[in-house]
Length: 165
Image (cartoon, rainbow, N blue to C red; front, side):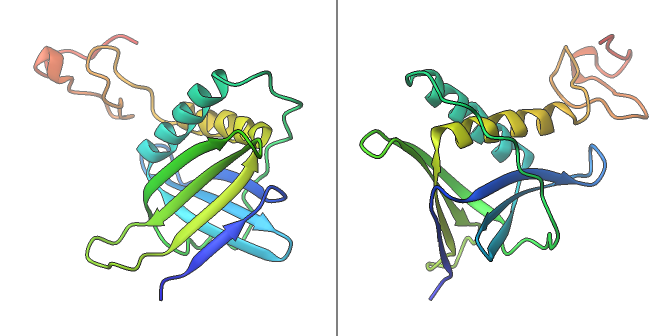
């Protein structure tokens, strides 16, 4: 039987990144009372999650006061890598439900996290995740690929000249 975790709206949720831009590991940490869970995400998953939350919240009525962003705290060892993310807004309960499913291709019974948070906490999470993404390497204005500190052989210019940001 796979692990199943459920957190309600009293949860504290934080997005974070460990390491230097270009070599970071993205994590989500969820805390509720004495229970704590850390999962690993890919940068594209964080970007997709925050974009979807922002779009979803833009369609809702005005948000209340956004809580302060939580910080990732030790221990940071991820329990599993996330494969699938689902997000939906439950209008009747006025909550956002985030489901995270373990990345495991050939395992039928994967670990799952169900996180029920307020729309205000979802807004804070979207802002925190956007800050993480923007703190990474700059992207090339021509091809959209990251610009490495040692240079960027842009495929749009056949690698002959560096793009000007």
